[in-house]
Structure formats: C-alpha cells, structure tokens
View 1 (cartoon, rainbow, N blue to C red):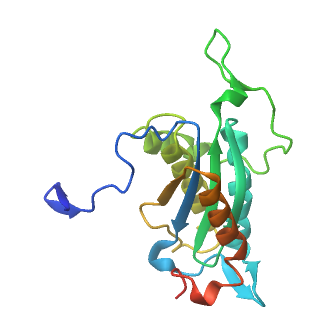
View 2 (cartoon, rainbow, N blue to C red; view 1 turned 135 degrees about the horizontal axis):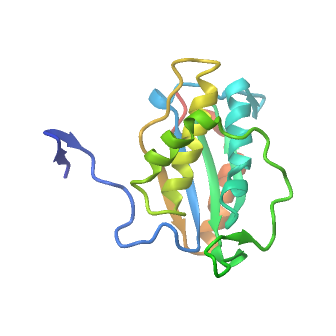
Amino acid sequence: MSDKFQNKYRIASARLKNWDYGANAMYFVTICTKGRKHYFGEIVDGKMKLSEIGIIANQYWNDIPIHFPFVILDEFIVMPNHVHGIIIIDKRRVETPKLGVSTATTPPTTPPTTPPPTHNRQQTINASQKWKPATLGVMINQYKRIVTINARKIHAGFGWQSRFHDHIIRNDESYQRISNYIINNPSKWINDKFYQ
C-alpha cells in the first residue's frame, strides 16, 4: 500500500526490510532512464552500440571501485535505456587503520578517468546523506549523479527514474542465471521487458 508524504502518495520502498545494504553480498542492480528513453545507444545485429551518453554511463560504471575500493564489479551491460550490473560488496578487501582512514589492500589498477566536477561535490555529498555510508544506495546515487551531470552537457533533458531495482544474489544458481541474462541481454533485446 502506498503511504503519503507531504500529502502526496508515494510507492513503498522495494528494498528488503532489515537488510543492511552495506553488507558483504552480491547485488544485481538495474537502473532505468526516465521514461525509458533510449539515451545510451541502440542494438545493432544483437550487439550494443553505445552513444556518447552510453560511453559516459559505461565509463562511470567502471569507475565505481575507484571511489568505493571494497566493490568488485562483475558482469554488467549498458543497454539503450537501462544499465544492468552485478555489484559485489566485499569489505574484507579494505583495511581500516587506527586513524579511521580506509585504504584498499588491492588498489584499483585503473586510474580515475575524469574526476567529478568540484562545484558539484557538495551537492553530491548532500544528496547521499540520506543513505547510510558505504551502502549500495550511496554508490548508485553517486553513479547516477555523475552520469547525469555529464550527460546533460550532451542532452539537457537526460534523466533517470527516481529509484533503482536490486536483487540480492544468494546462491550460485541465481548468480549464473543473472550473469547469463546480462551477457545475453543485447541479443534478446526485442523480447526484453525494458524494450520499448
């Protein structure tokens, strides 16, 4: 049932109750563009051909572990109107020295490509304060924000749906099914539920 907030109906959260979204786990994430508009490119002969905005979405997805060193990226794909990816949170990879500063035991091999513009840094920090630090929600919020900032330099109307879909991967069978779905998504695009 929908609740009211500021006298407006809102959809209840799809997040799993009592689950710590900063916990070590594998998460299958789907993020859709606003109105499922095809900003990221098109499927040509069963393969994804990225647009300029699609290249940005792909680049910043790859950059997530630079900003969150406890994250491992698994299969992912940027599709015409959404992004699918498996994010693995593994905080055992990070040591916390006595001063409270986290450093990765295995530093990222890829240097940052384009850092977020400094004038938007405070805005990004403020937007993430509603989330518990170092959680899936913070990562996706930061990702969506930096893609939006850069995509709007190309297309002023770019936007995301306000939420994202997630699924906690609990076993190998589920992982294999989801991984295969992501890999085969472009070749099966016409039958995909996000196709329009």
